[in-house]
Image (cartoon, rainbow, N blue to C red; front, top):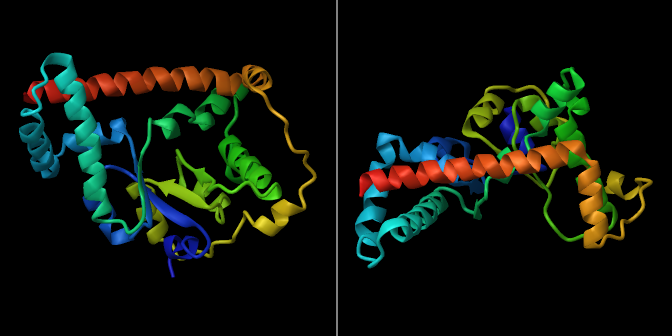
Length: 240
């Protein structure tokens, strides 16, 4: 049994892509995508027919100019999501690029002048803390880790409710038969010595402000997302 198959025993594997042809062999349960991934997939010849289908349909919308381009982009995201649903049995979530906005690994590596591996990884620690808090206090939601840079990060979060993984990292996992140990366990989280937070907006904003990484990466993520949306709009406009 390879690592991807082992991981599926206690974590819902989610495909992080718009390139739905590349994930069929891995049989993920759900999928996530976003404008950046849709833009990348739209450049591939195998998806040209999908773009042409949306263009042909939305040219009849009666819209023009920027409104027409925005409408086509929205429908392109939806169409990719619908086609992904033909591949996965579960849900498809079209994200607003949150996995890229909170790429904390590079921030810590740059600011702290050191590399992080395995359980020391700041992103891994962040998900562990979130998972522990939600399970400790019986908050009914699914915790999903994202923005993985390597399989080591993924394996340190084995047991998390959901992990959204790129096709490239799925392939790496599928080629390894090394044992996968469950790291996140609800029963263990129940025993954690942490207090429940009482938050209002003022306190939340203060805590975010006190976290330099969160402040920097949120602002950077918004800027990056805006750039990717503009790229997608320009690409769509060039096809009209």
